[in-house]
Each structure stands twice: as structure tokens, then as C-alpha cells.
Length: 500
Image (cartoon, rainbow, N blue to C red):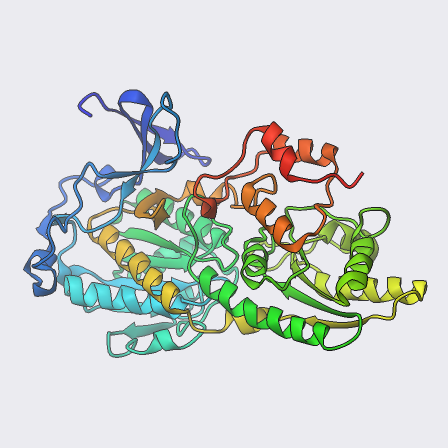
């Protein structure tokens, strides 16, 4: 790639945020910032890992400087090579002397299984791999920076925190004051900042990075993306998602037992998913006991031919019971019309949603109560806070370890203004803008949603006009589907039965 051309793209604020390197055959590297971009003559040091006996047996442990990861791996013979990201991992040279590192960790936003594991592995990774012994925990989210609340973190302090749910550092929404936060970072002599949070938190992290760069500080800012809903784009999945799907099975199983044990029983389970229905979709596919899954991406209606009420009546006549799984963001348009809700937001700027589970349960009971044709028995289960508060399972624990170590390797190598995560199975460093500009959503013209419709035998609640509108919208790709997104309308419409 000797003919590569490097360019910098302007960010939305006018600051230089994106580094783009172009090569042969349509190769594009969307690189992450480096301390050398704005600081000159920085000294480098041999990576301490080369002296670590634990890694002495590993062949080619250090990542080659030219290693990149392709964003798209399903291609045609004449496809350009496309967008790539810098591969995560340790470099032979680091830009921080271990004794000079003063790191801090902060967790923001809602709870998610795996938070404590990420904290633990950042601390242990810095200590055991790089010999760093000065790590602070910022208590209570972003506002903890200027409230001067800190916790000294050592491997002994964090030894068994991965066995607990929640976050030992505490968390909060909002409280982002860029100037005060960077003042605190500068005053404390912090030079590595690890920020664990969702898209809103990472937007704040991007602003912190820009301010640090403006001041010319030698501070690496690394983001670890966190969202239980799996709505962060580009990366394969977010930590805590696997645990959430697994734990949701318990609630679905309880709803199924309740519904099956009584005449015309209906079990309604509300799961997380403000804008993306991944948890509801995967929990439904894993369960095999669900008769209907409702998610934000797939509009539905209640009354009339092909509506939800008609389908419920049909299933009760066929099976004598039914289980409905609904994501918290589903049907908000119907609920807003019914309750005339206001557009209120929480401290993080997220729209406050009405409880769609309670609302739809009442609507179902009222409908069948008026009809007096079928006497139903409905049970409603909301396991949201039980799921958020549990420790991560084995798969997520391993995943959190890889995320934390990737972040540590990146910061020590001098990279900054990035988040880390797996892209097509390979951990990568991704610019902030890629995960803050849009959200990952279920594509309802995709084969995975078709698999769900086939599993539940529910109607799609779509007519051909709705299908065309969905295809014409700019739906981000479903990362968990391994490139299976169906872009051709003649294939997409075949998977969606019309109810008209």
C-alpha cells in the first residue's frame, strides 16, 4: 500500500476528527486520532509486554502497524475493498512510561451486566501487563470529575467485583460539563481516561477528547461502548447483550407457565429495547414459546383485519394460551395517541417512554372484556431491572476482558478519541463519530426477522406499501446477522406476508 493517500475530514464542529487513508482497489482506512497528531517529539518506550513471561510463548503477539479490519466481509468479485478500521492490540512501542501513567475510569448511563468486569480488567490489564499502579475510579458518572469523588483502584480492590452486578463506581445520567471535566483531568495529572457508556456517553467522550486536544494535553481518551440494547452500530455486539437475552428466558418461561396453566391464559413480557428490538427478537428466537414479538422497528396495529387483537383471538382458539414479548419502545406511536403523552426527556437526552407493557395489557383486557366472546386471564411480567442488575455470564465476561485489554493497549500505544469493539470478529479501534451518528436497528426486511416470523407464526402487520417505505428508509445494517441483510426488494417482500 505504498500508494496510500492520507486525508483528514472535518468533524461536525469544524475540528479535525477523522483521519482517512485511501489505498488501491477502493481501500479506505478510517483511522483513529493519535497523540502525535497534535503533539510533536513524543518519546516512545519498549512495550513492557515483551519482558512479561506470560506472553513470552506467544508468536507475533504485537500487532503489525499495517493491520486493519474490514467493515464489510460479504462482497462480490468486483467489489471495492471498502472501509477498514485499525486493528486493536499491543504495539511494540508505547507512548507512555509505566511510572508516569495516571489513569481514570468512569461509568455513565444505565446499568448493564459486565460493567464491573470491564472495570476489573482495565485495572488488572494496566497493572499486570504494563506495570501501571495509579488508577482512579471516578464516582458517580461524569459529574464525579468535578465533584472530586474518586476511588483508588488496585487489583486487590477489584479482585472479585466481576461476580457482582451494577458498577462499583456508581453511575448517573447527564452531568456533562466539558470544561469542568477537562479542568479536573488536568489538575489531577490524569493522562489516560477510560469512559464506559452508551452512545450519549460516547458523544460526551468525543467532546472531552476535542477539548483535551485543543489544550494540547498528552491525554489518551478511550471509550468502551456499553448498551444492553445492542443498538451501537459497526461493532458486532455490545457487552451485556448476551447475558440479557439469557436472563430474559426466565421471564418468558414464567409467562409461558402462567399462560399454559389456565384457560385462555396470556403472558405478556416487556423487555429492554428503547429504539432497537434485538433483545426481544433474540430472546423470542431462543425461547420457542413466544407467539408474538413486537419491536420498535416493526409497526403494528391493534384492531381490524390482520391486527393484533384478531391474531390473539386466533391463537387462543388454536392453543388455548399465548405468550407476547414486547420491547419497551414498541408501539409508542399508538400509546402516545392514546395517552396524549408529552415529549419529555431524561438527563441523558433520551425520550421518556410510557410503559407500553402495562398499556397493551390493559388494551387487550378491555378489548376481550367488551367482546365477551372469550374470557381471558392475562399476566404481565416486567423483568427489566432484574436483568440489568445481574452479573455478566461467562461469554460476556470473556468479551469484557477483550474489550478492556484492547482499550488499554490502544491508550498505551498513544491512540486517543476512539472506541474499541469487534468488527466481524476482530477487535478494532473505531473513531467516535461512527457510533454517535446513528443507531444499530433490526432490519425487518432481513432474513433474521423472517426467521422470527416463521418461529412465532405471527403476522408481519405490514402491507406492501409499508414494505416499500421500510426499504426506502436508511436502515443501518444488523451487525449480528453476518452480512445477511437483504437489499433487493424482490427478495425482501417475499419474506413478509401481506394481511390485505
